[in-house]
Length: 97
Image 1 (cartoon, rainbow, N blue to C red):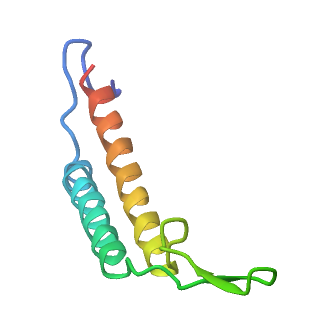
Image 2 (cartoon, rainbow, N blue to C red):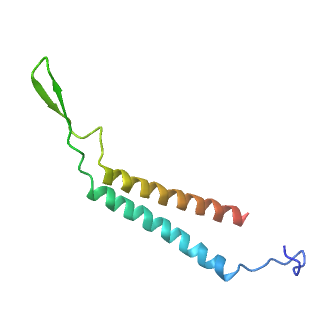
Image 3 (cartoon, rainbow, N blue to C red):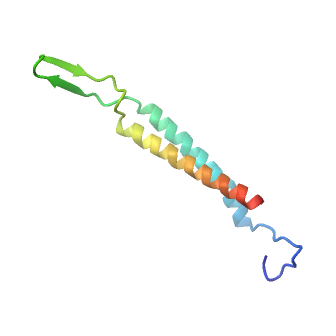
């Protein structure tokens, strides 16, 4: 409540708050989509190999354990976007009550 409001009145949201409320979820969704696209494009795993000197064989991995740097960056951007969306949703739910 502000100084000019009577106890029964509610102040209307300011225009900047309305714009922020509309822009933040879009930015979160864009971050999630861009992160997923980057992770999908860079889904090739780095090639690695191991040498066992006693058996004279070279073992190559199937990529299940390691992911490339591009995939890591894409997943990090996706997580950041999901955190923005979760924060925004919590803030919106908290304002209603």
